[in-house]
Amino acid sequence: MRAEVAAATVLMGIALSSHAALYKWVDDKGRVQYSDKPPSERDKSAVQMTNRGVIIKKIEPDKSAEQKKAQEEDLARKKLDDMRAAEQRRLDNALLQSFTSVQEIDMKRDRELQALDTIIANLRGQERSMNERIVEDRKRLDFFAKRNKPPPDSVQEDIQRNQAQAKVLRDDIERRHQEVLATRTKYEALKKRYQELREEQAAGVATSAASGGGQAPGKK
Image 1 (cartoon, rainbow, N blue to C red):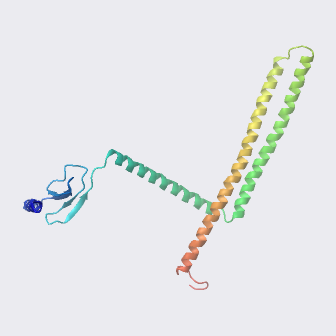
Image 2 (image 1 turned 90 degrees about the vertical axis):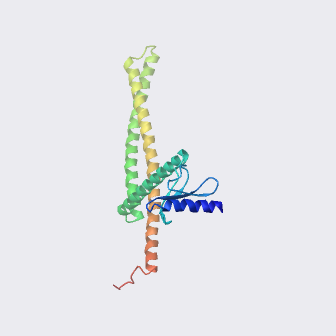
């Protein structure tokens, strides 16, 4: 009863000024407090009212350093998710605009694979030629070895250079084979996504027609 009288006294004192701001909050002991100043503890939530008890605004407590960090991380994650979603929409639109059927996707894949096969065949030819050179270089080494003579420096340099070039060719061939695998994987993923998007479009059209959004054939 005393608490109610005290609260009423505070309210009456503040009401003497028609323009006074009134703040209401709950203290640590669970008691409702009224004042013409907001709570000094910045971790308290409060409401600002007119002297007639009409709420003007809510005052949220200050966040701790941990809460601010968590909020910033949440905002950063949301921003990243929004960017990824926007990029996915862009890719989906480009996919639908680039192809009119799954067969067109297969045709584009086959063209890229054919180009890679041509490059690999050319590299294989260069590799065979280089291996033939290395065989000839070894024959030259054997020629000098049988005569107990040291081979000229030029022969050793040719062997080292040709072996290095042969390794470059082997690495390039392996890299092209990896491109073939990556190309197949890429187009399989494109086909799957393309089919999903077309199914979503068809489902959307069917839903629109079922809900009365479409028109019966022949009617305007």
